[in-house]
Amino acid sequence: MGRIRTFTEVEVARTARQVFWDRGYEDTALPDLERATGLNRSSIYHSFGSKRGLFDAAVENYLDEVIRPRLAPLRGDTVESAALETYLLGLHAAMTEGHTALAANGCLLLNATGSPLGRDASLQTVVAAYCDDLRTAITAGVAARRADLDEAEQKSLAVTCTGLVFAAMAIVRVNAAAAGDLIEAALAQVRR
Image 1: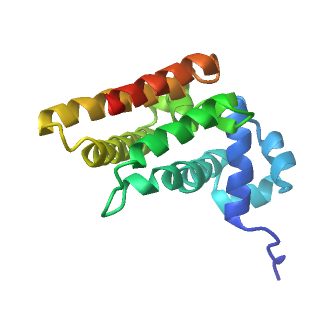
Image 2: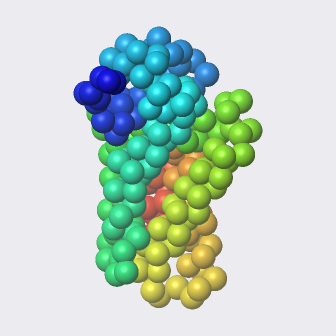
């Protein structure tokens, strides 16, 4: 008879997410994951198949617990006119005020795309979907906030804001002030 599982895969994925986020995929060794999760190698392999399987679970956890909740107000059937500004202000705070994982490490997904793992087709698919989700959410926020603009102007503003958000996420771990400036530029464009 097998042992009774004393952990949930979500808890393990959440813990592993932080290790991968802090160290990156390539610089995270299985002993690091064993120490952080309290699981041995065989339990990790049994539950997730491999280090990569655990990384994929950590990425899904990142999307579920970090990204999607932040974007939720921009993804509903009805988007409030202040939703985009609220999103950008929250992102600014996460990047510039205190010690958050985002401020310390940048975006987990963008970091992974800059590593050798970024050549992996399945990761590229996940990142492309994330980029589309962010663009769609920001587009909805722009439409709600800036109904005074025509469709082409709204699209241009959404592309600009999305680009500024991605740029801020890419630079935040190196220069939080510069990342904050990028988010402030997005806010200024929305408020103009």
